[in-house]
Image (tube, rainbow, N blue to C red; front, side):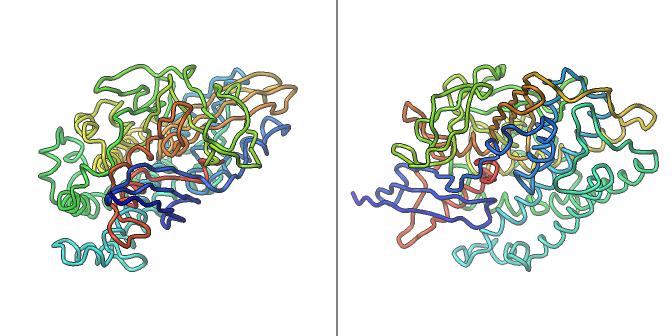
Length: 476
């Protein structure tokens, strides 16, 4: 059998730098090695800074999920300071976070993922002309409609946070902006407009109809909107069996409130739900260009190996939960939360499952945002009394659009003694661990088709983009 090695990268339509080495045998990927080639080192930048500087610095990790970083940092500092955020402030923080995640999901589907199917490579398929008209880069009608709707949705962040990205509105004690009744009415109008876009363009039907889907057969019967076009493409190209993962899913619980997270915390493995224990996390460094030993992030360090010695091949660490790698993201959240369609998709675990999981979350998050906004009481306090931590430790666990995001901090004499971050793409795009077990993307790429003459195989691109990577967060 013919064997070859293929170096793929840099990838377009991926946030940040990504490089993948593929061992190819008989036209299929036999093994994959995922490299995050750009070290940024925010964890190093934070050392010695004042505790509250983290609220300014960590959102700058990323320009598309900065509220996620802000929310995680604020919760870590709140725990270190021994403060409980004001319940009304938590509601506003959750709404801000949900708006950003919703905008990220829209961007991924319309600008990052679907344009792949407008390529000339797929000319001749029944759906190709329609996909070209809707999703050709810079020209597609779906792209223009999506970006206009996204901009209108982000008005909510401007109203509550002052700006986007890098808002400073979320603080350990709550939020800095107390919305008025007039503000609520304006935000309700923004959410109504966004729902109208989703129901007219993306889903082509009431969102509740999609949320009500309870299995694969019901999903496959969906024909309307851009969702129907995607499902037609997925059926034709058999995306259900492309890029299948190990079937282990992790969620820290999305949008924490005084009564618990809106979407549940937990794990799903072997077809069964389980409890998530953050004490069982370890960051394996065996195949990362990092110095030190495997450790829980509260005791970990970020010490780059400037010599880039073997067997390291990535600046990304390899987080493991009780020794196992877990996939995280929208599908994982919906699986852990118990949605019937998501759990049916979990048994597939491939490209189609990840994209439909994200679409399901878009529909459900719209309803959640409407409920969050309705529950906000302008007459209540939005900030608890608090003081910056002098000494203490804290963890902030939230769910970014791409999955589980954690910040762990140690504060000594008002200064940051340690700050460690595990981003969603750190989980999904991790290198091998000490046992040689590949990370979730590396495992999902095994078996992907490589056509003769392909420098950047289409199947590999579909699988990579189904995870919606954010490489700048991965390497902080």
